[in-house]
Length: 121
Length: 105
Image (tube, rainbow over all chains, first blue to last red; front, side, top):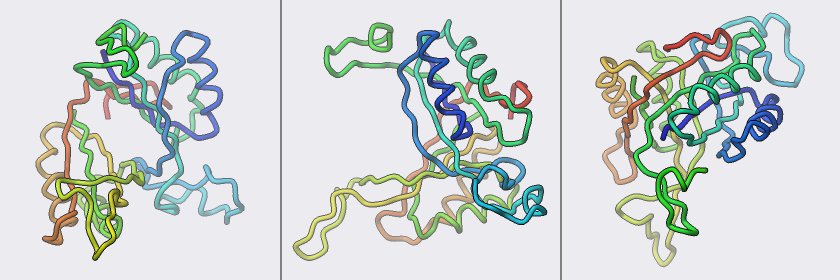
């Protein structure tokens, strides 16, 4: 099992959920986070009016609002899920987000005490 | 690669972020969390706080930089009292940039 942690644009969240659900990965955990990448926060994500020169300036916003989604999938589905998330979220602009794949040792479904593969499918 | 997750005092979070940025670790994710430690929250007189607000900072870095990141965070977040927080390091197998689809940080 692997945990896929993806940090994506908030306005791509609905589409990501829809596409993942259609392809059989409906379960996920989502969290509103703040973050920044190598560019130290480029404005242009936020909806309020801002001076145009600030939009391209590095570090003009300290943090950018993002959505963190985390889903645990079987090893063989990892590349598919990563590909889906990248395909849906790619706009070509800086700030499309990042995906991390982390190992998971064990999963337990609380209701039935099922462990491992049965717990996550 | 390793994921470093640090749970720090909210008032120290900006100090930690600035210290990391000046050492070149600019990219990170910040979230507000609530939690408690070994002391099970705090007692103030008769009032008992079970969950204390904290800030969780999350960054992914190459293996050789982990020690330095931990050092920076623990120096910037240190006050000496209970509740300074904890740092967890966990393995990350792959990282992708969505914009380019490239692997790695």
